[in-house]
Image 1 (cartoon, rainbow, N blue to C red):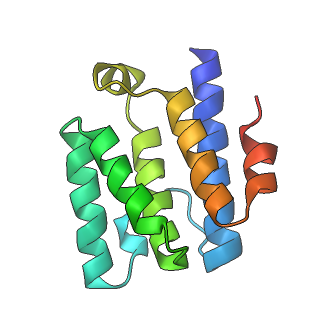
Image 2: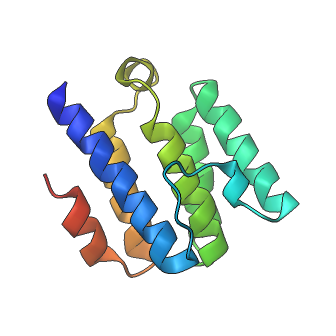
Length: 126
């Protein structure tokens, strides 16, 4: 349990730091309000609905397709999504074939697409 809490804190802090460094957004809790364009809000809301219904893997596949072009605004959507997933209970994640370790590795992979591998290693090596 303590290890999972520790992993949650690391993920949260890494997302916050990337939002601050790349987007000049200083927030304690990344949320949909950080997205300005309506079309991007709709994308995020659809991803969050998938996650809420237990279809986290499906939402994640959509994120992988979405970020493949390296668009920074899509990175912001993905970071908010992963922050949202990070706030879900371990039980919910397990019931839907997901885990904090998977979240951590998926977030590392995402960040690596944007050339931020060292940042991921700094925060997510535990």
